[in-house]
Image (cartoon, rainbow, N blue to C red; front, side, top):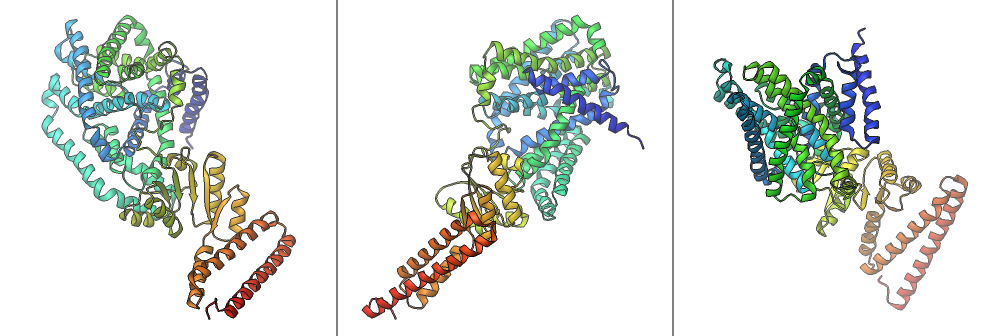
Length: 605
């Protein structure tokens, strides 16, 4: 059996496990750790990996998954609200940086076509590095984070015209196909994804969810992203842009949080592999041989981009304290520049030497940017990272805030009553339910119910359990209910747990797990029926209510008295007998009171 892939996986994982914790230990961030790991095992390090290009193409799927997750956080109305920043700020950044860089290249004697392609390619920024850093620093909800996200999204959209322009600039333009036809095909695919997503995606996921098989739902989520990315790649568009569109189409669906939970681990691993592949692909021999040109290119394009971005940040009123990080993140080169320069070389727009220099410069900029961010933290605003991390902002990209004070786990016959009571009093609740048919039914009536297994810690975090005040445990299954209580008590101690118990044994099991606010699901409804029986037999409604409430108080106190002994069967039996005796005495007192009332003419009947 060929175990080469096992050895490769072991090498990548071992390098990541070694370098990433070290980098974070010295305050350099995880990206530097991944890049250093790639350099260490790549052709110019230990040499254990000799084909980094193959790894890079596979690892680009990590960027695709990241864009899908970001799309899940942006509901179409929120995306529409960002249209001006995306097409305004984004266009201004791309055009301004391309003109500045291309203009300087042309002034130094570069041909017009070379200057245009170099300007457009270097104007692009790294979505992977920028968004990863923003998420680590909790910057996405800030004004700088939103501006940066809008600009990065426009850059992904700009992939269409940039790639269409390259054949027109090169000698191979006659063989490059008709750009308008390619653009029409690309537009048709985008429209097809949007329309098909609206009409089919939810129904397909609903059908998969009804299988109640978590691994199949995970497979469906990955197949969805792969399918959309493949369609976009087939027509020459950005796979990341396609994944983003797919995420946006599902942002309002009940499956959003479950999809996030399933895709997140794959995104983290593949994104780390992407950064490692960038480190492996750096040709240090060429960079060293052309070191002065590389240094001039690197410093020149970083300074030009930084100047344009700083001016743009000032124009859109990004706070001064946030501008350095935004400027550095967007000043670096981007992974899509690799594609642009490779296409330009193939179309004879860029000479081979120039293309290699530009690719190496972009990779080097991605390597030095996290280091420059560390310097900014220490020189510009000491302690800025700590402040940013403690502001309570969500680490998820431009998420609709999950700040509901209440989470309801299980929205069947019991949870619905709780939810409707809260809603009637103007309180919002985040609702989780694992029954796809039930979720679909309730959303038709306007409830914001999300499909997912509430016992999963990662899903609870996404639902806002770290910020919520109350968790209502209304799950039907007793074992799942107990597991959720344990998870919530261990990881979210600030939550007040309000639980539903199916019977006395379930009640005691919840008490063993530290839950104190428990209601037995059938007791109050049974007491209401008992009150109806009493009134039908002639008791006054207030008298029936008083008897029922006294009976309820006795039952509740009796269950609590028995709780310390619920694992001692002999003591439990003895105390239960005493409880029955007390009940009989209570009934006797009520009968005596009833008889006296009749004798005095104050009791009906």
